Image 1 (cartoon, chains in turn red, brown):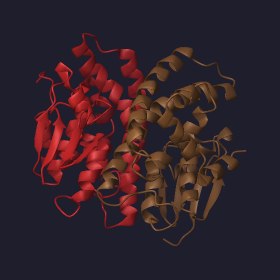
Image 2 (tube, chains in turn green, orange):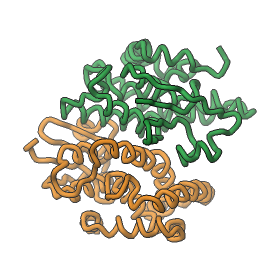
Image 3 (cartoon, rainbow over the protein chains, first blue to last red):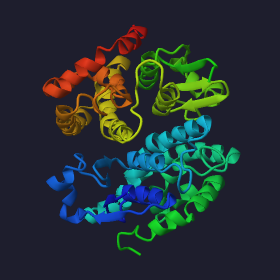
Length: 217
Length: 213
């Protein structure tokens, strides 16, 4: 069993997979992809992911890309080891995990990704963060988090009273958000804030968070 | 589960169509409950109780309430794996199927949806099209479809040798796009074009289209 993850420790999507691998107590090799040299856009890497994005996972002759497909694959293949991220033994709970995984993918991600881009990536490209884009997306994110606030008053985690892949998928982008002034969107919502404090202090994520910086410590 | 499945939605909603296509492929009985979006029914408390995001479709089976079309299709495909069309491939091949489901969700859908909004829905509602947005998104879709062309040159369907959820999830937005100027981007790529012709001619999809007429 030789799992190789191609990516970079500061990358949100790579971190999503790293957290999942740690929750499942799996051995793996992290192979660094040099983003600043454009390695992810060149033929050897494009053979692993034709969309030229990290991460990609190799498991012997199988290559998987798209971070949420990788976590899904890992959680399913290793469902009997480590933490149960998918509630596979309970059809209803498993369905609810899928619902809130889709919520992260379709509601949360589109609102938070542009904010993180403006604060962390734009400066690397020589631009100042665009406050208009940040404000517009914070408004959208606020509406999404209002729904999370209501949900988290009745269940401890998103899919139920159990931590699942649905919660895990939020970690990397939310982690970066909490380093910016936009953190107020979480801090102003008590149940969302408590949920964040819980999931971000899980040992599997704390390990990954150590590598999540652009040198701005 | 033996209880009747209920789908709340709208026949012109692409997300609702995604779920209907899946139920048809699986040859499953269900109750369709139209949601009158024109009067804001999807934003009222009774609907928000099923989907707090106020979007169609929403799904009920007994006391199980689900939303997000791709979560609903996966629940149906896994839960009724033995019935109708096999929309998933168990074991190791499921990984590749998952990859292309995520590709649909993150690479294809955001771009195709924007184009359909500008070129199909805005004219329907009498709102002017934003030509800059069309140009920007056509350029993005071109790059995505180049990857699809290479993929479909090596594999009959996106997820593997058989039609699966990875292909099905594309049907509503492809069908809509083929009615607009974006059609040329699909037609000009032989493997993509053949795949589109194949998946859009499936009887289960034709039934969904007929509901919208």
